[in-house]
Image (cartoon, rainbow over all chains, first blue to last red):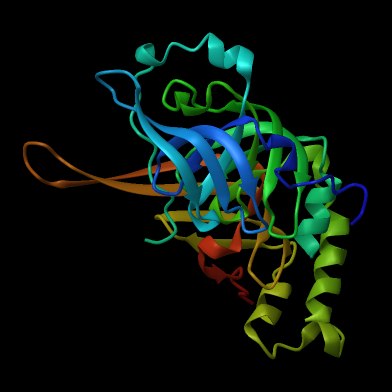
Length: 103
Length: 93
Length: 97
């Protein structure tokens, strides 16, 4: 590939904390263990962050998850510094909307 | 291939990617692949009050299939080059 | 008259090619409409439009009267890449005499 096209893979994120937004609007945080061309992901020690306008963010433990690439919208690299200053109980927001392919 | 090539030229410039879940993310275009998956650096969600979901994310990968729009920088569009490339691509199909 | 290669309309995309550098109307999924100058497109109908006006139509149900309230939101964008999978229809500019 041309040099202008830097790696779009997720190799540099392996064994790092990532935040995934799925097509149905959920937010799953965990350690990236593996991925492939289709953006299928293996995430260990994962938990879901459930957003609410009344109670702040609740965390639900999920464990080892494989997420199918077709259902992934965004994969974010969590910044440790910003993450450590984050007060999840103070964050009040609506859950994200699902990805609207139709209608 | 036209838009893959186009976005490769745009690497290093600031764009705003609007997703099909109404989330809009501004960042510096880091890379793009053949599926038009996009990597952004130093991101900022446009409406951070409404969407605090990515507050501790600096860099991200966006799956091409969930992109609705990309707002392009004015200095990142050369209309003549685009017209020529489009006509060339249209002949090839 | 344009050369044969430029002028022939044999398939739908040829009509779009003739709209290059012209203002077109694009209807998209999720109740969105765009008007803008067509600068690039491909076979998926991915496009780059310039001087774009987007109109989003939303309907809300009034809490008390249960009436449908239709709202339109407009905005202007200098240059926009539009992903083709959201495109429902493309209308070339009117070619009146």
